[in-house]
Length: 456
Image 1 (cartoon, rainbow, N blue to C red):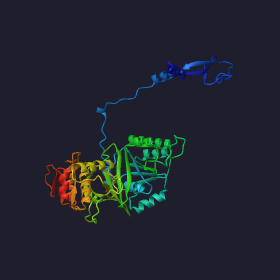
Image 2: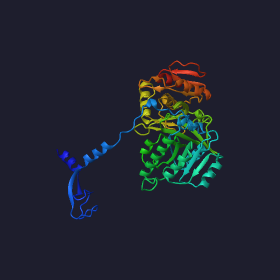
Image 3: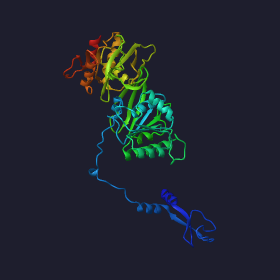
Image 4: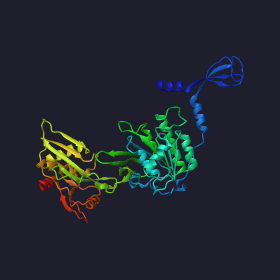
């Protein structure tokens, strides 16, 4: 009852009405501001809920269309000129999509979009809007990258409405905004880079993309903790979120899609920075393998899938006697909980006792992986380090390990083995399943005890 009384009290509002002309005012005054009569304002309680209900009843219903009558947009995706970028996007730029490209300062975001804007193979009509650089600076970058300038037009303005107006008149294939933190909308009375400004600007660019079938790429900076600067809701507004990351041990950059309404989010693109900008890596499946590494104990090669592409990775294990009372488990790039499970299975299902041994497991190259197909390679690296016996660099280990010590089949095993053949591997340790048409020497591993017997 008390709640109902409070709601009723909140819905009642005092209005002062003139008994002479009927004008209404929120405050009392001695004279009516409409007719000029004195002492004619009288207080009156009105129910605001009834007023809102009356206003809602006057609204026209939203228009509805039958999906069967909608003409599908059969425009093909737009190629960017970089196959790795097209792979991460799901096959190219979708007309009418809004894409957010994020990355650390100086990682090459502006270089990448400059190449996309002027790709010779793509030949896209492009508008490049920058709130950070002048036309001279942008042109010097384009010339340094040896890019085409014929179909690129530049806007040196921070106002969102002006940029959108120019895009509506020009109707380009691609609009690039560098960056979303530097532009501002006249609809919001705050400085550029604020939460309200970023959300409003992104919503306006989304409306432009959907209405005029223009692919829009907006660049977003990230904060010190690796998050996109601005509200998290910005990721919900856009169609695709792509992050550009650096690979520390090589001169490679990694492209990942954390959201993609028009493709997979599991694809990984690998590009290399050169004096003429980014270029595709010719042999991406082996970029994380060092050919110069000698046969050392604890180093084992495995295969993971990132989207549709198999990658060979190097797992390194170090097993040493525990100095303190409690054995340590440390990982880099590998799930620590998974290592705890695997070490427990090894101690339980094999003759290898790891209860008094420290285990350090590292994925070479700085990658962070969670593919269960790495289980067998992780166990093999632990066995190799424990027995201090090197394993051939021409052998690859693929398989998932269960709690019973059994080796299980993994997703798309034959594709992984085909990649191993292409990269020159000679031998493969796989689960006990049927494998057809491979040039590899196949060692079928039923359980961990048989693997230990083979390697010791």
